[in-house]
Length: 73
Image (cartoon, rainbow, N blue to C red; front, side, top):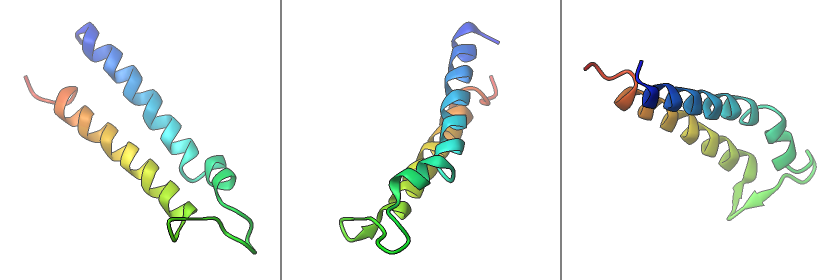
């Protein structure tokens, strides 16, 4: 594996792992308000936006890997 792809693989793996942890885990508890008064941002529940953000990060990692690392030479 070329050195450039190896570095990209490590970066994408780290970002993907971080997104897996922060999406449904402790990040969701930090961003959401209480059960009695959930947090809203622009009229949308913040937890929903938080989930969309990390889903986008995960999807982006997969797309970048598919177009660079997993591409057939």
